[in-house]
Length: 90
Image (cartoon, rainbow, N blue to C red):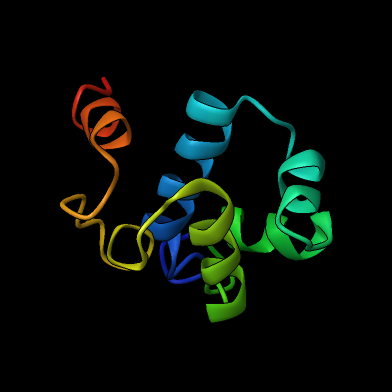
């Protein structure tokens, strides 16, 4: 798949990092934890569809992810433990 076909891959990578590394849930369980269907969430994580504002707000409410982090990769507003984990990733 080309970058054109995955225009939101940067957002997708941050979502996948959080789901796998920090929370340790499957896509289905992670999506359910924020009130979304796995099929919708998987499109966000694939980078083919942009994370919806409702989805981002649900992630912020449930897990403390900032909108700046999810959409722009700015980690300053993350809780300290998440910010350190993000900065220390390989």
